[in-house]
Amino acid sequence: MSDTSPQPTRPQPHPAVPACDEQPLFEAVPERAQWRYKPRRAFWRSKAVRAGAVITLLALSALVILALVREQTGTQGFMVGLGLALLPVPLLLAAFRWLDRVEPGPWRNLFFAFAWGAFAAALVAIIANSFATQWIATATADPASANTIGATVVAPVVEESAKAAAILLIFLFRRRDFTGLVDGVVVAGFTATGFAFTENILYLGRAFGEDQESGHAGFASITAGTFFVRIVMSPFAHPLFTVMTGIGFGIAAFTARRRRFRRTVLPLLGLLVAMGMHALWNGSAVFSPWGFLAVYGLFMLPAVGLLTWLAIWSRQRELRTISSQLPAYAAAGWLSAAEPLALSSMRARTVARDMAGHRHGPAAARAVSEYEAFATSLAFLRHRAHRGAAGPDFVAREQELLHHLWQRKHIAGPALTYAARATGRVWVPPPYRDYDGYNPYRG
Figure (cartoon, rainbow, N blue to C red):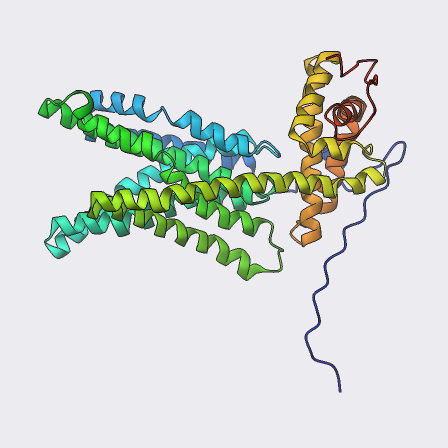
């Protein structure tokens, strides 16, 4: 009788590392590709066509949403709201970008995410929310309950779905740049910050208009109260909700491709959590001021703290991935033994760039920065291959990255080796002289 009992799942072995010869060959990458792997695509799937369509869509959305907001706030209210709504934006974007320093995503993806949230998602939200609230008010003949239902049920579903569309698009069409949990958090954060920016213009502009009509001014004004609640107390609200969706997509990104059910369910689960948190937040403000304070203190602030811890832990996990994956390439001769240690330390990376710039100029510092980025991508690519999440172009992508490293090795290799020693990643008894006679202990 044959044994039909389930067999234990064995971990996939690491893929073999290509040998590093004196003049290595990179046969998997087409010669005409100029070391940037580009599979053949139909015309309507070309990058130029996609970029043109996206820019056109976002530009039209911007014109319409800004016109609608100005119509509801008036020109003066619009300008006041715009100025006040801008204040938290640089801080939030800088925080999310700092989180993404290990393997920075392309700025074009982040610009798209912010613009989608500020214009496309905000436009969908303002139209859908208004239509749904009016329909509920007509159907129930109770405008007060319609506003409550709209704020606690309709708005969370519409707004989180509209913001999630940006994450989904980058996940599908910029898959190479979307590799893990940190990428999901950063993209979601940029999208939600853009959405909150436009929404704050609307609320602050309306508050300013009401103050103008009633003659209120100073700290007792509606504008001051709105500013305190939305800009001072809770600038993180929308990013916190949407980051739940980003976490779902981020976990799906490094899940093995064969686990299709998990890769589908996790983003949906993250979206449902985002909607639930959004509904709880809106409901707390609708039903009772004390309920708002209770939700803010007992739920929102702890959630922000937990999310901050998770984001920092994920960043450290990325550095550990680098230190565990790159030694295989060092053993094959592509990297020196000290380079994986330097590349897994943000301080050592900075020292390497600064040292190269000090000795050889800005071009050398830029080459080291590029080397660090390519080496990080290589480590994550190998990690995904081990988990079964790498794409069918793994070999070509690996050779492309190795080629980029090889081109910059003569500058970046010594700089990173020096940085590993100077930062204590590799212990050398002081004093020592390294990198063209420079003594790191003398500065």
